[in-house]
Image 1: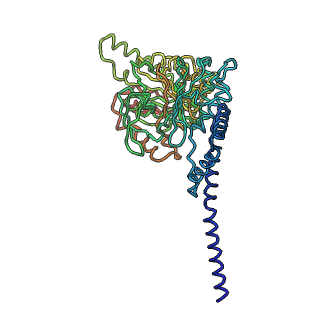
Image 2: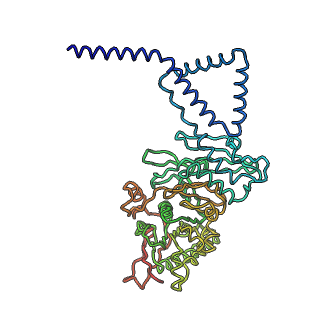
Length: 528
């Protein structure tokens, strides 16, 4: 017991001595902590000072120190002030949390350095872009979102920069997108008069809008949705999160349309077949369809045996027969309309009901026809393309961007409504749409995302609705059910239809009775 008592007493004495020592050296610890924080603050300020201002700043500090030393009792007052401020700064044992760095000080210097090789002038005596320059001198305004990503930026550039050349502008846009993040889409507004470039990060377009009945007028086709700033119209839509309104991209068809035919370009998996299904579901509400699937992938098998669908062809044999019938049907409609106009009578219903020709990858059939020495299917589109607006015949073609050069000159000349889906270079977009695009797509775009240009309008962003193939088991069930609900059934077609396509005797075992108006025929590629 005595040993334990002595041990406890010794421990208490040591603790008391430690407390006395801590109390004795507490002022020194306080001052040392404050001096250390002063040194850290001075180092941070020195690193944040631009290089061209470090020399004058250091000279001013030395001049101030010399002035203090020359004053009466100046060194004493300086030491007392330093010790007092250190004691005040070090009174809190825990250092205050360092403020988060400003995103502008982290990202904008890197962007300024990346633009310098492209915007610096070797003959400029005072270039705004130089190795030791400051981004504050050329960037007029900027903003960042809640995640610290660049939202808007105004960039000034010298007057000698060739902003009228698309290649030079594309280089600058590529650099800005690389430093600001390739996962987003950006709008670049070039003010060539004031030498300013306004960069705006665009919000993502909705990808979860399923196929549904759109609130549109007859002859209006909803291609997809775009930015609210692009159009002045909103339509109600149903989304998984609840009903709402979205700005649509409207393509107006019919005899008074300035853009009666449409051409959609894109790579594999970009969503061109989805766009054709979107148009087909809307066209079947007031017209008839003829579908040519040149790729032969079965993307349009859901339209087989549907009321109003004359045929869904996948072979060269059937495509030639179907397009030959379409050309004859165009002539018949023109003759019927001219005769009714001459007699002063109303036009017959079978000549005014819209007829839609949907062709998916027609160049593949053209190459096959050339190899077999048969007529090119594109040649049979001459009459529907040139006279289709008067005959109420609309042609929609979907082709890969790489095969756009193999389309006939008539297709390029008559399809003034253009859609380009997928991520492509600015030069490819310019060539496909006919005008430069001031929008830069993201590095990885979802299916159905692209750009649309209707006639002479400026190109705008486009997101095609999720009109999946209902026969694709890999697609979500709710999206497949939405498409199935829009497919027409035999009891829903009451309008007058165009004369049905004739049967092809070589592969027809028995003559079929003529179908009633509005009935569907499925031709399997038989020759005339």
